[in-house]
Image (cartoon, rainbow, N blue to C red; front, side, top):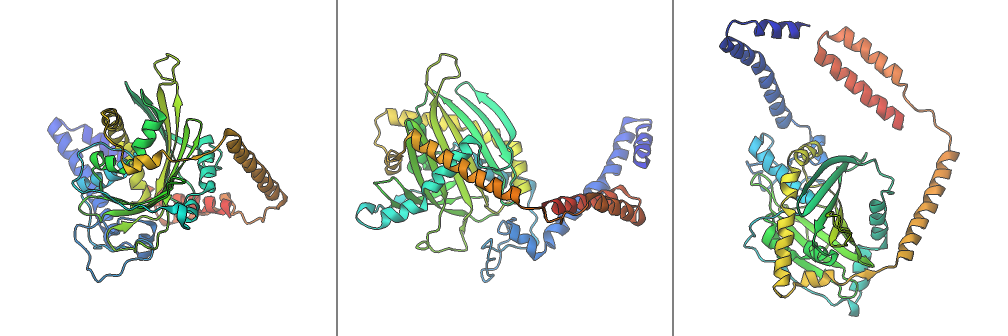
Length: 436
């Protein structure tokens, strides 16, 4: 009531200038408090907070070279750096481009190098097939059918252009970074062209201005499995990111299951910079669909993308950036694909990566159905096992926690902020108690 009375009193000032100055004086302390809180929180952040993947390496004031990297982040930072608004926008933009797996811009001057190995005459075929194996195909099938047992997807976006439509969803697992799912339909494009477009690292250097290095470490001409190294450019206050990616394609008819994920690769040692991203998953399901023009022809291609990674940005900041700027990055997809189509139509020779995209492991629809039936049987066994167990009775009574919070809040302070904080903590503990 005091807040409402103060605002009402300000609005009764005789002139607009008086109202403006009074409102400015009223709001200024709040913004100062927010700024001081952010500054103090960033400067005095406890050591355990750095383990959750914050901006530990994103500092314009470079850390001392002698500082040892953290076991989880592998990087250090200046503890008193507070990023500016433009810096955060750049950081979030980087994340958005990575989520969509596509951007379109001027190419970098760096060139990718490749090294090929004939795995048919050595153990590389077996080793590479284990890096991206049948379990990964099964997992991607679960994601496509929305039967992976994860949380429900929350729709974020539904936008379109004359030649492309795009829908996106997000979900937040209990453990791990936010996960994203998108459905893109490209008009007048074949599944094979879109597949090659995603796989072609050499052409990616022309439109992805974040990619500064791409190298094929191994490839297998029998299964099409590849191990590639990427280095992606980040804003000046962050170190670059390194990815060791295993990828492979399964083909069923004219549908393609394209798996890419982070894989261990001891022969490429870790370095302080660029920072290696270990938790990485980005996979597509590509197939021909009817055109949205309503002519009934299979002249369009649908791409279902599933993506998540832990790249050292706080998850809440990443989600905010995706909400604010995803469409700005996504709408650049179509020009990139059309440029690729024109280059291919001109008769230009295809790259090694595009050639590897055409080598896939063929599976039948019966085999995919057998994977589904196997999953169904396993889920029934787990469900039966869970139902036979009796509850342990360790749930924390929610009423007791909330009641105690009310008593504590009323006895400590009459302020709204204190009560809200205590109630929020109580509700969080109640949720934890339910899960125990």
